[in-house]
Image (cartoon, rainbow over all chains, first blue to last red; front, top):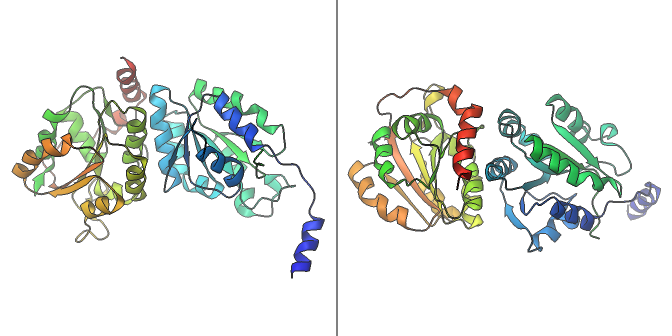
Amino acid sequence: MMVVASQESQNRPKVAHPSGARIIQLIKDANIREIVAVPDIVTSDGLLWPISRDPAFRLTRVCKEDEGVSICGAMSYNGTRAVLMMQQTGLMDSLNAIRAIGVDYELPIVMFVGLQGKEPAIHPDQSSAYGVRIIRPVLDAMQLSHSLIEEPGDESHIPKKIEQAYAMSRPHIFLIGRSPEVQ
Amino acid sequence: MLKRDDALKALIPHVSDNDIVVAVYQSCFDWLALNPRDLNYVAVGAMGQASSHALGLALTHPDRRVFVLDGDGSLLMNLGTLVTIANAGVTNLYHFVGANRVYEVNGSHPLPGAESIDFAAMAKAAGYAGARSFSDQNLLEEELPDMLAAPGPQMFVLEIVAGDAYPRDYDYIHSAGARDTFRKALNQR
């Protein structure tokens, strides 16, 4: 079995991963100091663990993702900027809160969502995983702004999208398609 | 048992101009009629989320007290909030739960476990600084000052029946005007 696994690993296309340190710096550059999170394996090592150790951030750990939608929405009333981190399963579980608080109430909920189960070399819309493949169409159906971070360089649009979310007072969802590297 | 509007009236003298009140469902409608004020936060959006909104406000406004007028059915939809709030370390959050044991605005069907749920025990087990149940109006009025002077999070379980009928103005609580009024009041200092 180990030989088979090794062969599979060797046959897997080599892809580059985005820099977690760069993403975190850009989050800081966008004046985000509040992080609200449910752990997600895609973003665990490259984003959430470093953020949890960074005194520039206040990390609020929540039991369930829709709590985070409400926390971030309420924080925005005095202009406090926040990021909610979670996995796409939690995103699906939070859609009613996002619908109500983000869309109906027009609040700037900024989310970083790890696409757990997505093949690194494949676009999410073509993933063999149903739970991944449906994410972007579901967000489109809800008219939610979203963008993809997969390759090094993709992260450069983070500040602009965060600025837009707060300027327009609307949600934005960053979909993380490959695990960010720590550096 | 407490009448809900009597219990809410007992709270009114303890709410200062600086305090935020987050309210849901019938407690919200009662409160809006009994104590209309610009720092009433009514845009909770999704059932169960009141205390999570309150936590966001408590974290970003440590100089204000945040009162939550929650429902028991609502709290059951978001029980993890008790642990999240206790773990967040906020001392300015005061959580009132109107325990009528039914989904009042959805046909008055009973809650699961309506006969046996102990919300105060749940709050204590989650790590709240204090929690107590009240079914006597005089006892509530006696204990409110000390519990509100103590560091939060504190839970007040109000064992209630409906009191006088107050209008259910859903259009207002979901309106942009209600959110704008709150936002302006919050940021006017």
